[in-house]
Image 1 (cartoon, rainbow, N blue to C red):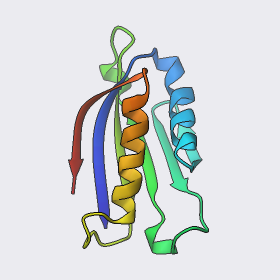
Image 2 (cartoon, rainbow, N blue to C red):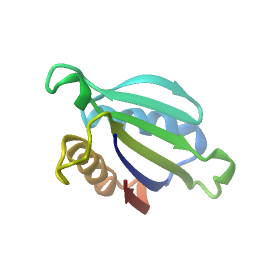
Image 3 (spheres, rainbow, N blue to C red):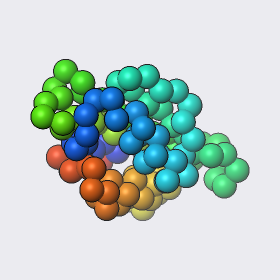
Amino acid sequence: MARYTSSFVAKANLEQIPILLCELVESCDFEVVYQATDYLMAREIPGQVPFSKLVTVEALVESTAAQNNEVPVIFVIKNDELPLNPNNHCQQLFQKLQLALKQSQEWRLIAAVAS
């Protein structure tokens, strides 16, 4: 299973986070499957790649660590594909999401890990 993790800080108040997350994942061609105040799950829209390569994005909002309009969010991007090739489909979508986060004024990178 390919799995990539990154931590970002959203420069927004806690109430704005669900809106920012939806806009972010939809701009990267994911559809929201489930959303709560401190969690979002989105999946890649089926039809472009085999089922085993479909990517899921989970965003975990650390609401207890929020302070001064900065909210930490952990992103987990994963699929069922074995990451035999370092440039696999999951890695490509991870990079796409990372680029969207880095280009946005509302997000600041803390850490990124590939596993």
